[in-house]
Image (cartoon, rainbow, N blue to C red; front, side, top):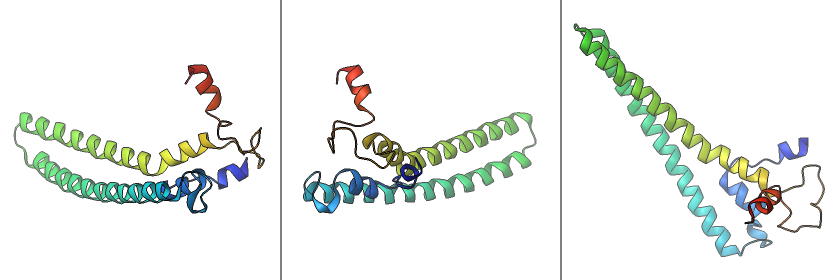
Length: 143
């Protein structure tokens, strides 16, 4: 079980290398592997940049709304600034969670369901790609 936890993939590149054969050509052909790796590397970089931009603008806008909340002399303006501040915090939080999920946690989750060598052994039947954790679910759903 410890070997399984140490072999967990945390990036799309390591996921493709480990489970699609990588550059040694065991799985998909080398061209498909390189295209998938390059596309997901670019998407990952773009998502991290978007996270930084959203975080920066969210922090600046939250400070602006906090100043408006402190300077408001009417209760209606305070309530309006408070609602906007809560909305900004929720939006930034959801953006952070989604980007972390797609960049880090999704490759880990997919990596857990692709291979069955939890105990350091080959899956039953050798390296048959049909022998995965997801096979019982696929059989249940008749996919």
